[in-house]
Amino acid sequence: MREQVVNFLNNINLGYLSLVITLFIVSFIFLHNKGINKFFMELFIIVYVLISWIGFYYLNDIFNLVFDLKYLDVKLYLILLIIGNIIMIANINLKLPIYYKVINYAMFLTNIVMFVANITLIIASKVGAIEISSLANITKFININFIVFVCYLNLLGIVYIGKYLSRKMQFKIKAKEIFEQESLKKDAATDSSVIDDVSVVETNSHVITNDVSNNVSNDLSSKEGFFIDGIDCSAIFDDTDKENIARNYYILLNDVNAKLTNGYTVKEYTKIKNIINKLNIKDLNNVNLDINVLNHITIDEYNILKSYLNKRGINI
Image (cartoon, rainbow, N blue to C red; front, side):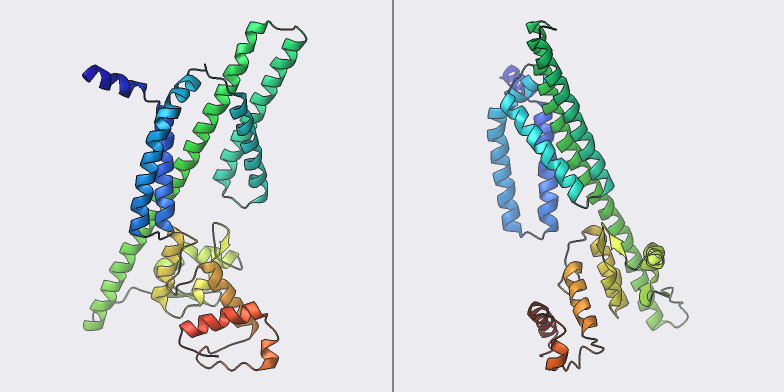
């Protein structure tokens, strides 16, 4: 029995195991950031484990042969080439962080080099420049291409996880700073001898708490907007509540697509602010829009504004 267990463990392909674990962690983090409820998270874990076990019985031996450079599947190779080209097209047309672009370009160039090598071997065999037995090298190139793709997926997952952990750590550090500042403010309210160390910095007409200004004042002074992952997040600084500004800043550091304290994503809130500015609304509590003013916005923009104001208890 012990020998069977040892043989089973030794037969597990580390490439397949690493890919399963990496994709699970990435999927779990992604769903967690999207606010998926507990029931669906538990269902996801159960389904993922079942699929992984089924995949183990069907794919583990294939992975072992691939990593031993003994497996040949031209169809799989062609699929990987197609996937590589799709990734390249997406890499060119999408705005991605530089580290993702570097990884994508490296994988694509590796695919191209191996493809050219295979074509060269095939042509050489056709003209009799090499022995037929040398065509075994084509199998190796195909397998190496598969191994590179597995490593590519693992690397993407590791970068995603590392980015998440980095932001999580930064978020915790800043949250601790907020807690300490809030404690000082409460102490100052009961003891006038305590000096409130929360200062206000005004940059580009935005009021920012001290902990936020240390991180973003340079960005705000050098750009028209404040950007995180290529998304303009400067709308958060229009909030009159300094604590909300700080909270929203840390929310965006953790996930730029997460909902802010007002229940909107930064993209949605930016669109709302643009509509408000377009209509030159100075006081949201006293909105009086006549037909001439409403002509400046579309029906969709009007519905967005109406929904936003209704949530604030304001009817138009």
